[in-house]
Length: 411
Ligand SMILES: Nc1ncnc2c1ncn2[C@@H]1O[C@H](COP(=O)(O)OP(=O)(O)OP(=O)(O)O)[C@@H](O)[C@H]1O
Ligand SMILES: [Mg+2]
Image 1 (spheres, protein in one colour):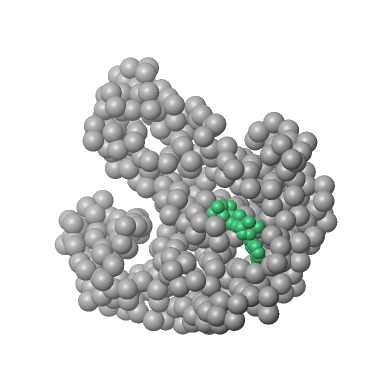
Image 2: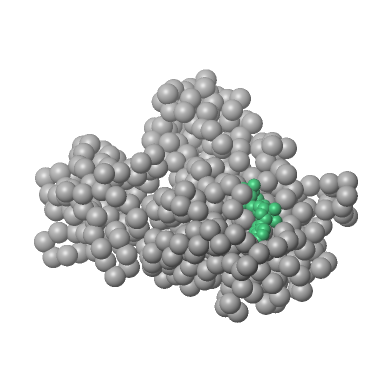
């Protein structure tokens, strides 16, 4: 199974640099490695020292084709995806048909509109290219866009899937199964496009949040950046992603830097270790020269990785856990760093638990046994695996499908 590492963090902190360094180190370990960027600025090829004076990558072949990094100490390919240039066929079909035809197929017109206008869906589709190339490699390192965009991107596959399932009435699916009877061909085409899109979004989700995927967070030792990194970590956990470690980059150490800056960064590093106590926290010094090219990047990788597995800094995996506690059921959702004020939850009438954390949402399809229960309450609890949102369900045989049972977190 291909291992996937997403390198994420705030804008400008060193994501591209860390992604390139990590990929080189993985290649050096003998892993067939692909490093991917969706940044149209081509900074990944710049970091790898592949860009010529014209600004165009040397020996650059056609877009969407991985380019071999000859300077790598092993097999490393780089793939630069231009999201803007990508026109996805099923998406085009869907856009064209969305309003009228989905409504014609029985999709709630408001939902049809919602699906057609999900912002950034095109960007998700760029990840489909990654999914298509991944099977040919042992390791895929993704140089992500800045945090907010990445989080939106990672939340989309599930959100769209759910929108579709909510918006598409059972009857129209059954009608289509029965040889598309009664449905105009254009409607069938729209439904097929929708199905295809959902299947592919699911493959993206499996690739980036499956058991072989992890996120490495890059930050700098500044307070503001650390705060954003901490929020990103909480949101990633909510969305079901495994954060395997934190890299504090560009830490000023040594006499060439002003003493005040060195002191401030030292404090920042202490603050980072404090905030991310449950995670491995590594740091890279502020290099005198920009780390560009294989040699400089591998030197940076050696400092950050300390000789360990390039793709795993070693944080323990936590996961959604549902268990029988005798007279009730407990659902534990890891949400490190979340505060009770930000958490809201509800159960929908089709048996899903909706967890809102600030502007972010996770929808968890409840197993049958929990659909026959009522939410008794919820709290943020500290467990061996870190902080979890613990939702307590009590059996309610009379209630086979609950209505909107709103209850606030932190009870
Ligand atoms: N440890 C370091 N020491 C010195 N310079 C560094 C270090 N890490 C990264 N840089 C430099 O900092 C700049 C930003 O790094 P990079 O492009 O990797 O950030 P990024 O997070 O990918 O930015 P963006 O959000 O714009 O994509 C680059 O010029 C890079 O060479
Ligand atoms: Mg970058």
